[in-house]
Image (cartoon, rainbow, N blue to C red; front, side):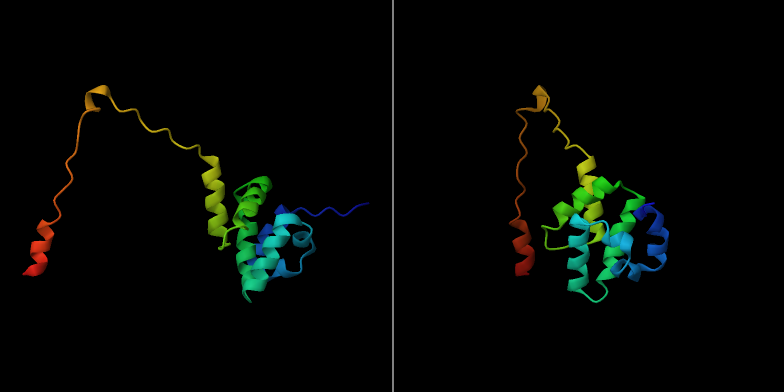
Length: 125
């Protein structure tokens, strides 16, 4: 007898009508960092609902947990947008690369720094 609303079912409608994020019960039911992001974006600009809708549309590509974790990180930053949230998610998916080992034959190789003073001669002409 309970009403269950899944945000994933509403994403196509939010894509067509982004203003619905202002009052939709399913959006308000997300709570936590989603609610904090909604309030921040709506307070920042009159059309902040568009930015928030773009963030919710990331749920088409990424899991709710990934978006939630990225939002909690992004809320601490000065800029909040779907592009920033997407980048935080993608950065979290990739492990940092280990630098390649330098072969012993190249360990003593030195590169001389270029002499940039020759460009000063071009300025004086």
